[in-house]
Image (cartoon, rainbow, N blue to C red; front, side):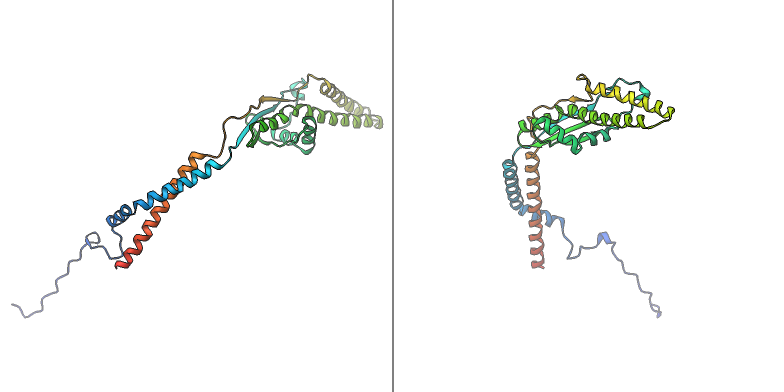
Length: 254
């Protein structure tokens, strides 16, 4: 044997996937075993939370929604296309449910006006809706608008047109320029025609596209959904309790 020192042999190191798990790592089999042992916690809490959620859901009153759709009448004054100037639907909605219009409709309907509005720009319509626990009352709230909105809007437009005519007539008496008088005279004639149309009972500015009906199916509470969510919440709570107990037991054994 040679007197020279033999070179050190390299030691074999097992790859990480061959190494034994550390003590602080959780064995999935132990975890599933703990969940199986604590299955009654999971089942019990799931059932308990489901019953509590169902009791809450079935004690809540039914909430209904009544709806209707209104829209402006196309060219109500029978004007040529170049003379038509309809309001954009969002501006019309603002005008229809201004404080002045709401007061007018309330006077006509002999009740307060309390509806929500949703402007549907693509269709050029306004959706009315009301929510509550009394279907008949909801229908009355919507009808208080659909049955009075056209009359109230015609009254408002009539007042504005009469005011415009008074101003125009005053200006015609004051100005001396013939060109200005001709221009004002043409506009006065247009406003006079518009006022005559507004005074005619057959003229309609706002039409009811979809009338309201008394709702029969509640929109909430979602009892089935609430019950299912209660069951799932109880299951999650049960799993959490089982895992916490498993973690404490594991620490005690170590």
